[in-house]
Image 1 (cartoon, rainbow, N blue to C red):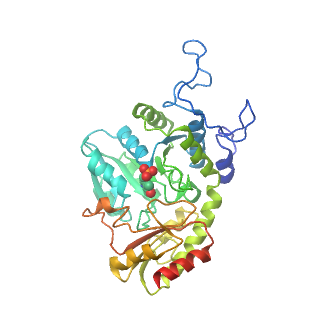
Image 2: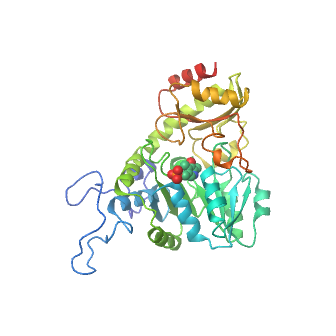
Image 3: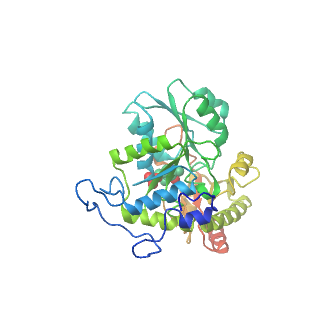
Amino acid sequence: MSDAPPRLGFDTLAIHAGQDPDPLTGAVTVPIYQTSTYKQDGVGGLRGGFEYSRSANPTRTALEESLAAIEAGTRGLAFASGLAAEDSLLRAVCRPGDHVILPGDAYGGTYRLVARVLTKWGLEYTPVPLSDLTAVHAAVRENTKVIWCETPTNPLLGIADIAALAAIAHAAHALLVVDNTFATPYLQQPLALGADVVVHSTTKYLGGHSDVVGGALVCRDAELGQELMFHQNAMGAVPGPFDSWLVLRGIKTLGVRMDRHCENAERVAAFLLDHPAVEQVFFPGLLEHPGHDIAARQMTNFGGMVSFTLRGGEEAALKVCELVRLFILGESLGGVESLIEHPGRMTHASVAGSPLEVPDNLVRLSVGIENVEDLLADLAQALA
Ligand SMILES: *Cc1c(COP(=O)(O)O)cnc(C)c1O
């Protein structure tokens, strides 16, 4: 399917790209090729191009073709986690002494990777609020190699203008990297908007069932794709066949899951907006959200993440996290079940005291695909 000339619809690609039925058995589902190595027919005589599963494994290859198709890129690459993908990417495209622009409210793990690991290797960075294009422009230096974009951001659901950032990056001969974990390719196609590389934590919506940790890179330029593939093999942070299979299975239902996530999140945001215990609601679908117009332009819907602050301060925020019954208190996001967390003490504890510190009365919801009336009733009793 991968070289079919007419561009198929998103859900069709999600179900079929890279996943032709097995020619030997007719198996409709791509098998889990649980093997590390492959028999050679004579020295160097490879069947189907596979020689060792760090370099390539058929289950992973199916996932990588699926990723490339759904993000409309030339090459998809799967990794053992989102951070493994980020580390491999940054060390492939940057050299010691290069500079990276990070979002002012970057995912905590991305910030930690750059600030605490890659600075030791010689990388320089500047955190900038990406919604302020003048500030981004001003932060560009001679040695800027990458502008790193997240939109919507975690946990404050800030919106950045991908096309405008691509123009700034390209004028500076830098790459625009977009972490598309929150939006997913179903809602937002960064490569079509000018981004060079898309990053995913497939742990989240692509996997979709909170049962696997994984990451991905998809790029537009074939030459860069070769370079990244070289680093994927040379650095070795690859996922196993079973984890690849789980992500591949999750992707098949991404579209229908996202429709429900978006619908439920919109209802939850409207409910919170009207609640007297709530101070502020962060959701790009709200007209009063500062990034609403850009989100409406570059996304097909507003996603399943909703954050809010409480009038009662940190104490009230922690109490809601404990009083919910259906929302599960836990890190991560993007699974079918609704999750709740306190970013200040949980996902974003690693950025405490840094410029990326989040408000202590903030609560983040990953709105699942349960019946929305049950979710609203749960929040109502927890906020009462
Ligand atoms: C979870 C997450 C990551 C990191 O991915 P892992 O799979 O946990 O390594 C990166 N970016 C965003 C936006 C995330 O939510």
